Image (tube, rainbow, N blue to C red):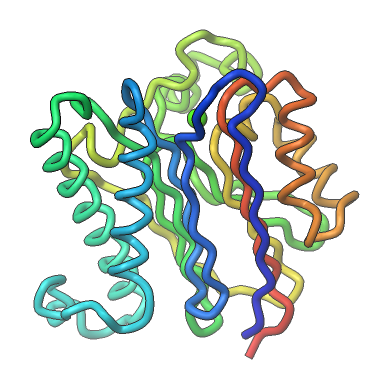
Length: 255
Ligand code: CA
């Protein structure tokens, strides 16, 4: 398996600080985007704790199996990995809450987390919140995550169309976040990877100003090595005011 990854992040044209955090590790196949929220610098703290915790628990074999009840998951290795992702997310959530209890300035902080873990020829995706993972394969873009937002619930219930949802004021209200909401139930999926696959992880700073059709166009236009930067620049041009982060992972070879 050979992965080629690149990342780009920008505070955006309006904000002074960047509360997005990311991690890119081609050797361990681990890629993370976290979009923090909270007053003052708290969002930065939350996203950094999340990325740090996941990196620690998901890179290599550092994890103590006793801590994760992995022994109960003998059988399908994908189940074990998804359990590991769930465990890491909940550990991150507990650490952020602990930090918030110790420091009143951090009260209410939380973060989204989107993770891609490539192991063997399988891609495992987990997320909490509205940072997304996309897959571009054979010129077609698919969204691998479903936002944990109030508007996504409205879309699912048939009360909003995706087009209407892009314009409502409360479109970023989360139904789950790591830290703020305590224990979390990340969505996890596993799928086989193919040579040429392009995975994109991004914060809502990308997907607020750019719809999926525009993201797909950019994937087809830009070289994989330039795509992360291109997505961020296009989001700024498209009127994005938020922090903006994109990770692009190309599967160069399988096996
Ligand atoms: Ca954001």
